[in-house]
Length: 321
Ligand code: SF4
Image (cartoon, rainbow, N blue to C red; front, top):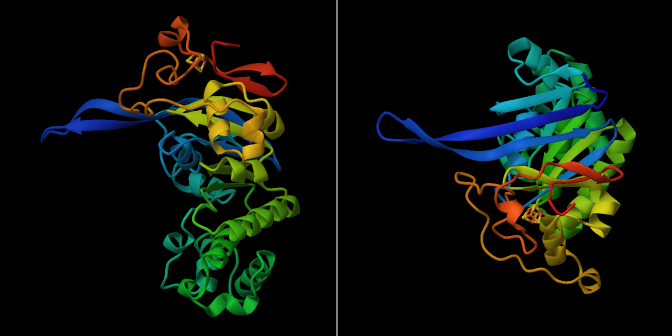
């Protein structure tokens, strides 16, 4: 039992590696290897990390579109880790996803009215005139015109299509929206319009977001707290200001030093990361970051650091603390 809107504990996703005609399992890709965090009502948790760090897999497990290998997911006081069938469909109305590519996630043969109302029709929640009214309200809520509802996705710009994707996600009044690289495909000026819309909607409907992105500036714009993932692990999680001003984990320090604006870079010594991210099919023993960490000590090669609180609400998994 938990007071948080969402809490995940030691969540893992291992994908089997098979070989031979019998498809024998010869190993596993450890895409997510024991992450724990929570999200409170009305809060935005950003999750950052490079491609392949497990952030999208984590989001898909929370959405229950991907079964976890181990660990648990509590949503709104209920353990949803293994829910299936009718019980899963009922709880799914409370959490929705916004995808990176709005065009790919919208059926091109459906009108916008059909796209947005589909969850209402599937869940038999409204009918006839009520559906049309609800779609009109949702379009206005995301900054589009109700008259647009009979048009098709290809008639809209990328930013407008992402607004449609957000309207669809809001159709069933969710409590949590998982946005996976939701603005990454958009021009920078459109990105900030969509981020501002999402912030407005959060306040309007007391929504919680998990905002997944590789883009540190975008995550900073929208998040209350930020978690940093590396090779399937959550290595640091903290309130936004503390994380960006005083990052503790050497990986977070390197990410920020590479990504932030020149003025900030000048205030902090530039860190260059050597080597590639190890394969999640053969992750290193000890700290997952030790093969690239400029501050690694002997202990890092053999002992896995646990995520622990070292400042108020600031957690880090590193032997230096
Ligand atoms: Fe670097 Fe060791 Fe900390 Fe890992 S535990 S980040 S290798 S210092």
